[in-house]
Amino acid sequence: MTLNIAVLPGDGVGPEVIAQALKVMKVISIKFNHNLNFSFANLGAIAIKKEGVPLPNNTLKICKNSDAILFGAIGDPKYDNNPTKKIRPEQGLLELRKQLNLFANIRPVKAYETTLKNSPLKKKVICGTDILIYRELTGGLYFGEKKVTNDGNYASDLCSYGRQDIERISELAFKAAKNRNNKLTLIDKANVLETSRLWRKVVKEISNKYPEVKLDFLFVDNAAMQIVQNPKQFDVILTENLFGDIISDEASVIAGSIGLLASASVGDKHALFEPIHGSYPQATGKGIANPIASILSVAMLFEHFSLSEEAAIIKEAVDASLKSGITTPDLNNKSSNITTEKVGSFIIDYIDKID
Image (cartoon, rainbow, N blue to C red):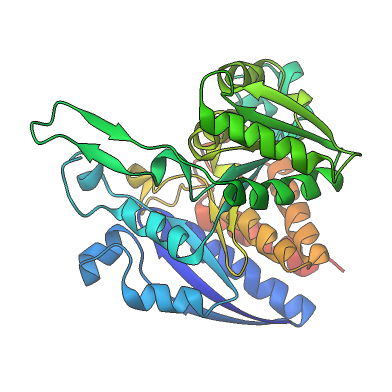
C-alpha cells in the first residue's frame, strides 16, 4: 500500500516522540512492503515562531493532500502563563480539526498488566479495563459563539449541536461496539441541558439499527465517579465535546501513565493520529518522554487503513517493552538510564525480529 503521511512534530517533546514513531513506521513499511511518503510541516508554537501563525497555509495544504496525519504535541509555557495572548498554539490544532472536519476523537484506554502498579487506582478495580471513548470534536462549547461585554464583567459560551453532528459520530461508536462487546454508554447531562436531550433522542433512534448493542445512559457527574470506581463496566463510551475532554483525561489514570495513551481524530476524508499527552515542556530535550503513546498512534493509523496485522505487531512489541521493563521514568523511576530513543529502539528491534 502507498500512503502519503503529513508529519507535524509540533512543540515540546513532540519531535522526540514522533522520531520514534517514524522509525516504527519505516520498519513496518519494509517488513510489509508498503510505500510510505512523509511530508513535514509546522503546527502550534513552533509555527508561530517560524511563520507567525499557529496553522500556516502550507501546513493545511500538506494535510489536505495527505492520506493521514501524524501529530506530536502542542503548547508552550510562554503562552500557558499568559492567557491574554491573542495568537495561541492551540488555535492551530482547533482550526486544523475544523478545516479537515475531524468530528470524531477516538481514545482507547487499556489497563496493561505490567503497569497496574503505576495507577493511583487499586489493581483489583482497574485490572482488565479496556475502554474505547468516542468524543464529538467539532461542536459544543468549544466551537459555539463566544461573547464578552465591553466592561469584561460578563461572558458566555454557546453550546450547540445539530442532529447531523450527533448522528455521524454515533454511527461510528455503534459500529465499534458491535465489533467489540456490544455495549455502548452515552454520557450526557439530559436532566439539565437541551443539547443533551437532543443527544439522547438521536442516539436512541440510531440504536434501533443496532439491536445487538446494549445502550446505557449516564449523567456526566455520575460517569466521572463510575470511571474510577468501576471502569470495567464500560466498553464503548460516546459523548459530546466538553464531557469527552474531561472524561477521557480522567480515564488516563487507569493506564498508569498518560504516556501510554494514543488517539485518533477522524472525519469523512481525513484522519489525524496523536498521543494524548501534552508538549511536556519540562522534559523537552532530556530524553525521558515516553514514546509509546505516539507509537500506539501509529498502530491506530494502520488500523484505520485496515492493516490489522501491522497494528497487531506494533502492539505486541509495545507489550514486550513493558513486560521487559524497557520503559521511561514515568513508568519506572529506577529506569533513569532508559531514554525515549532506547524504548523506540527496543520496539523497532522486536518488530524487525518477528517472523
